[in-house]
Each structure stands twice: as structure tokens, then as C-alpha cells.
Amino acid sequence: MPCAEKPLRGFPVPLGNRLASLMAIIAILIAQKFQTPVAAAEILTVQQAVAIALQRNPDLLAARQSLETARAREVKAHYLNQFNPQVEAGASQAQFQFSPWGSEAQPAASVSLQVEVAGQRSKRIEEADQNLSKARAEVADAERLTKARAEYAFYQALYLRQRLELMQRIEELNLRLRDASMMRFHSGEAPKLEANLAAVRYDESRKATLLARRDYENGLRVLQRVLGVPPRGLIELSGSLSERAPDVDLERALELAMTSRPDLRARVFEIKRAAADIALTRRLIIPNPTVSGFAERVADAPGQFIRVLGGSVSISVPLFDRKQAELTALQAQKQRASYEEKATQLTVEQELRDAIAAYDAARETVQLFESDAVGRIQESFGLIEGSYRSGKTGLIELIVAENDLVSSQSSYLDSLWDYQVARIGVETAVGVDFRTIAGQ
Image (cartoon, rainbow, N blue to C red; front, side, top):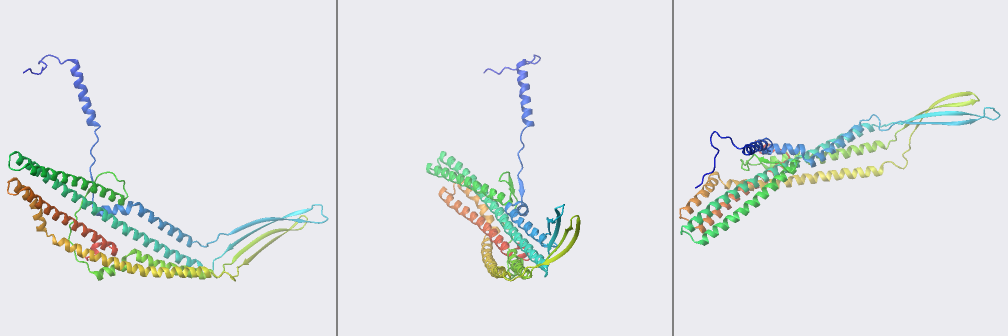
């Protein structure tokens, strides 16, 4: 067999080979220098997700702009006077009979200012303060809902990731079983039908893995949307669906909700704002006086002028418009705010009762999957494979056992997800952290 030619020791390598080797080394060095590093996945906890959402969620940022509008309204309410002075200037022409000068210009100027009376400024400030408090409560309510959406999206993505991991584990198991069935078929221990069935079984599990990966990636994009970040980049979720499920006292939770829910507080501030607006409108029935001052230069004779200074006070007479329409509308607003407060109270109580009922059911379901039972499910995945390889179990019996194990594991994951959804529901219905609700 001919051997590849090698350069003899002591003899130079041809120039063409040396150039080719040098160019190859240079190409390797350049590739190593400009090689793009693999981006590390960003580790994200549920607390970090909530903090990012409260800082960057665009819907929440838009809602917070209502605070700026309310603050601007309060700034205007603190003006010393709501009206700017009016300055007026003019001139007239005085005509003199039998005078060679003919006429003289008579300039005049005046300034006027409407003055608020009857404590209108203090009532306007009170109305603006109540409106600002209402805006703060509404923003707090938007933050409550944003926090709930962030937690929901985080745990949904975590649930989908664990579901993907389960599908991957089943796929790997079915791949090994497919290979084992092919070996048994070639050795004559199993029929061709069993090998084909194992291959179909693996294909189905591969499809389930692909669908689970799609769902997980969609869940990550939903989470990124809630966080207010572009849907790109790697995220590694850090956390667990499983946690201790404490009891929740309904009466204590109701008491907390009635004092903590920001949307309920916003209704109370709206009632106070409407009442302050009514008081202000009643003060506006008393007309504001307009104080004026003027100065004129009057021609008394050709070349002779008289300076005239004076002032006046004018006031409108509330004969027809006594704010009847405005007061009627404001009374209706206040009554509507009162009804809305009662409706919100009923809604809060209904939401909380429903949330606690769902929480109790989810907590009991999770408790059915005791830690030793979950451990037995994990152990059984390895036992069925060994039993099949040793020939103690046929493929049909193995498929039935595998289906039962997969169903049990999926039910356990679903129960953990249902518990997290129910826990978030209770936390959102009360409006405070869950540890406070559970008395931890």
C-alpha cells in the first residue's frame, strides 16, 4: 500500500506549501479574533420580573401620565389669582373751534383685574388635591394589575418550560425504547410490528416536544411584552412552581381588601372630589368684582392738558345664571361616584370570594401529590425502561404504563400551575402581597 509522501528531514519544504500553511494559520487566527461570543442567558426571578414590569411596562407608563395632568391641575389651583390683569390703551382727538391749532391728542390707559372672593381659591385647591389623590389611586391600581400580569406571565413561562422538559424526557425515553425494540427485532426476540410501533411512538413524542418548545417560546415572548422589553434575547427563568400552600382566612382577607384595594380608594376620592367641586361651584355663584384703574390726559385748551386719574369696580349681577345647570350635573356626578363605590365594594368581595374558593381547591389538589408520590413517579420512568429491556414487559404493557406516568406527571404540573394562578388571583383581589394575606 503506497504511503503518503513526507518531506525528508534536512530538506526544505517547497515554497508553495509554506505559503499555504502560513495562510491557513492566519485565517484561523482571524476567525478566532472575530468570532462572535455566545450570549449568556439572563437569569430572571419573579421578583425581578415584577420590578422590571413596574419600571418599563409601556401601558403602565402611559397610565402614570395621568398623574402629571393631575399635578398640573393642582399647580394651577394654587395660583394667587386665576385671572390675569387686562391692560388697555387708547387715544382720542379733541377739536377746538376758532383755534389755529385745530385739535389735540388725548391719550388714555387703564388696567383691570378680576378678584376671586368667597374662598374660591381654597375650594379650588381642595378639589385639585382630591383629584390628585384619585389619580394616585388609579395609578396604584394600574400597578396592581401590572404586577399580576407580570407574575402570571412569569409562572406561565415557567410552567411551559417544565412541560417542555417533561416532553423532552419522554422523547429521550421513547428514543431509547425505539432503539431497544429494533435490537430485539433484529435478534428475533420481538416482531416487526413492535419495532414499527416503537418508532411511531417516538415520532409522536418528538412532535409533542416541538409543540411544547413552540409554546414555551411563545410564553417567553408574552413575558417580555409584559416586561416592556423587545421579544429577543435569552432569558433563563429562576424559580419553582412548587411552594408551601398556606391557609387563607376569608374574613381577614376581606378586611384587607376593603382597606387596600386602590380602585376602591379611587372611588372614595372621586366622591370627595365631586363634593369639593360642588362647594366651589356654589362659591362661584357670588360674582367676582373687577377692579379697574385708569389714567387720561385731557386737553383743556390748546396746549393745555389736565391729567385725570380714577378707578372703578364692576360686578356682574347673577340674575339669570346662578350655576343651576352646573350644580345639577355635579350632584349627578357625586351620586354616580357613590353608586360606583358600592358597586366596586360588591365586585371586590365577589372577586375575593371566587379567588379564595379557587385557591382552596388548587391547594387541596396540590396536596394530593405528596412528595413521596411524585418521587415514585420519577422512579417509575427508569423502571419501565429496564423492565422492557430485560424482556419482563411487552411493548403494549410498557405504553400503558408510560401513558399513566405521563398523565400523572402532567396532572401534577397542571395542579402546580393552577395553584399559582389561584394564588395570584387572591393577591390581586386583595391588593397586597400574598405573604401579608397569609400572615407570614
